[in-house]
Image (tube, rainbow, N blue to C red; front, side):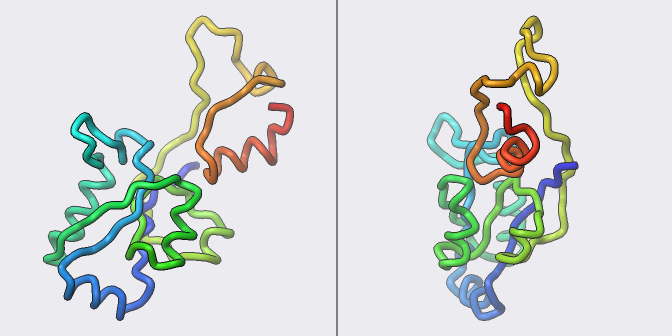
Length: 151
C-alpha cells in the first residue's frame, strides 16, 4: 500500500537552527502531483502538501519557500543541501531510507492504472508492448520495471 509521506528531513540540528534563525525553511517539491502539490493558474506552487509545509513553518515561526524540480532529483538535491527538507508524495523504501530520514506518514493511498472506461485495457497483460506514462524515480516506475517487464 502506498504511503504518502512528508519527507521532512532537516539534515542536522544545526541546519534546523540556521533555518529558523534565518526565518525561512526551504522545501524541495515536485509540483506534478495534484491535489498534493501542483502549480496553479497564477504559477504558484499549491496543494495539500504545501499547506502542511506552511503549517509546519507557522508552528516554527518561520517562512516557507518552495523549489519545484523533477521528482527523481529531490533526494539527491536534499543530500547536496539545496534545500532543508522535501515535501512530496514519496513512498518510503529501504533504498531511500539509506539516503534520507522520513517523517511519520500522514496519508495512505492506493496506486491504480487509469484507462478510458470503454477501453481495451483491463489487466497488465493488456498493456503488453504499450507505452505507459509515469514519473521517473517513483515506486510505480520501479514496479513496472521489476514486475511488468513486458510493458
